[in-house]
Structures are given as C-alpha cells and as structure tokens.
Length: 265
Image 1 (cartoon, rainbow, N blue to C red):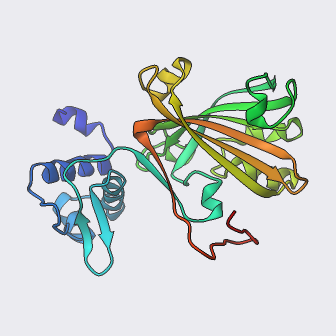
Image 2 (cartoon, one colour):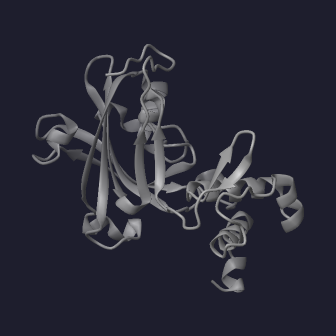
C-alpha cells in the first residue's frame, strides 16, 4: 500500500496498519506488551480515541489481547480476519453486536414459496414482509458513522416479519436496535423464545457482488426464528455469511440467565 493510499484511510486504520507492520516485521515480538495508550498518543500524535479504535481493530484481527494486570499483549504475527461473534447471554444469542448495522437494500410483500415455508415455519402461500439488507461493521472514524458508515460487509440478511408488523421496515437500519426490539416497542409483541440454526453452504451467485466475494464461496447460514408469547413465530432472519469472515462462538455456563426468566434449553 502506498503512502497516498494510506492517507485516504481514517487515522485509526493508519495507526492499526503501522502497528500491524511492526508486528509482522518483528519490531514488536509475539508475547511482548504494547506501549500504553498515552504513550501511543504521544508517539503518533493522535487522539486517545484513535488509539483505542486501532487497538480494537488489532484485537478483532486476533493480533493482540488485553490482559488484566499486564497490559496489551501481542498474540500473533498474522491476523485472523474472520469476524467473531461470541455468545455468552440469551440477549447476545438474539442479536448482532452494536458495532454492526443493517443497510437496507429492498422491502417487499411476499408469499412463502414451497422452499421458503419450512424455514419460516408457515404454510406455503402465507404472507410476510421481507426486508433484504447488508450487515456492515461500522467505521468509527467515518463521517457517516452515525448512520452506520459503509464498513466491511459481514453478511446478507433477509428479515421476514408478519404483515401486521410491516411498519418496522422503515425503522430497520435507521435505529441500532435489533428488529425484535423494534417490534416490541412499536407493537408490544415480546419474544418468548428464539431458535438459532446454523448450516454450511455456498454463497448464492446473486449475493456475491454485495458481499464482495466470489460466487460459490463457502458460507455459514444463520437462521433465527423469534416466537412471541402467543406461541407464534413473528420474525425470521436468514443471514448468509462469507465463511472466512465470520465465526460463531457459543459459551454456556451452568445457571446461566439474563434479565427475564431465561433458562438454558
């Protein structure tokens, strides 16, 4: 990458690239502790926010780890560019982290086809509102960060909601809340349970361009079905993730619960 190309990047990305280069060149050894935030601020002439965002980026790439009582330690010379979603609570099971945002591509009223109906858990021909969107990681230093920015695409998502909740379609992407929370706020429908299915597959050719991958690339499909207290499925999301960009990590502990009376099934 040339200096001219690098200058087009946000400051935190420039700093992250400099630190990555130092790690790969062996200037910062694996196992070594990085300088503190204030020292990096002084050394590179950037804000503390920029330093924190650069370190966050290195952490997401698997290069560093913050260790209590020690500091920020270098874990590896080569990055792992897969996006990792770690699930520790029921709330995290139902949503993507706040640093990602949906960018709506299309909204349509549809009827469930014979192929789609089993995924939605409904009869063939049932009516749904479909919202198609790209989920992107937000660019914290971008001028458009407040609106989500145009960070790297991590998945294509088709969200299906019952027709009576179609009004949430105009809110998706404008608010950072997950769709099920928007439905609860606007219509009072509360989630009683959520089912998550994972399966391996291939990226459909029609989605390859939007996700910036080659057609037929490996994918991880995540299907989430939200059932309300009336025991009906009111929302289904089907997300196609490029396999090399996404890891789904689930951590379960005995006695695990959060907020309402959730139980481990």
